Length: 340
Image 1: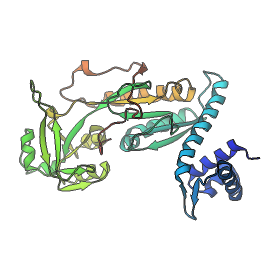
Image 2: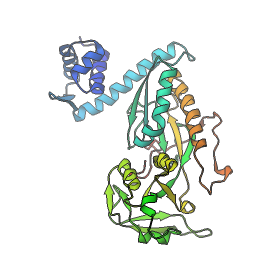
Image 3: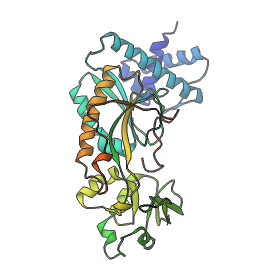
Image 4: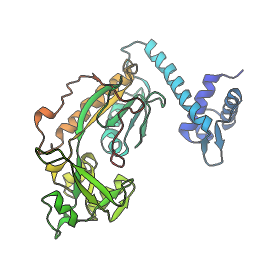
């Protein structure tokens, strides 16, 4: 008779490791034993879960759905064990965290490293994704969201805000027409980030006292499909880019990029850590939320503020966890395409 939970663990380990052999090493089993466990699981559910090749594993359509359920079941079982050990037990186990790629690499990743050093019994599954994730279906404990949060029953801790800025390098600006207003942009080159169209329109807030947003028609001379490439091209003097401020903080601090027309920027975009209500009762989730929020908030407080910011517009965290409601299936992840 198949041990379904054991077979599920083998199945998930194979997905995480990318191969049956690696899963065997992680679980201290032979590749043959891993193969038998997955075959038994497929026989039990009556469908093929994996396409196996000599180089990689690929989930079938049924396998994708089943993998999400397996992760949720295994996470719930592990969490039940931790809960039984005591509400205030030291955090241990596997914590799944997700964030947008550049924020996750430049800002949150060092915090995750500090967390692992502070809590040796913890493991972190760290997913950097520029897409909407479903916390429940994908077994995610904590997500970082860069977006105004809509209404939902998720738990959210605001850690700061980012700006959507225009930037260019001193190398590019040297000898070019000066930029004192949005109308001056017509004389300049732009770097577009897909899915921006070759003839895009950038929107800016109305003038003081006005109601109609201002627009600038942009025809990028260079189109790229990653934010990293856009930043690199801007540093090299290829043109003006429009991007979230945290993605160029290092370059602005180092002087290789400058922010243009800050008085014309849209309102800042809030940044939150979010989790499901029932996850916050777990020591591993509660501890990480507290640990990361304090450090991320400190990072944002050290960031030079927008020149037009007023102190009353800043939302203080002060360790408080607030409940907000998000639109169903959105998790608050609706940041602009190409700018997460």
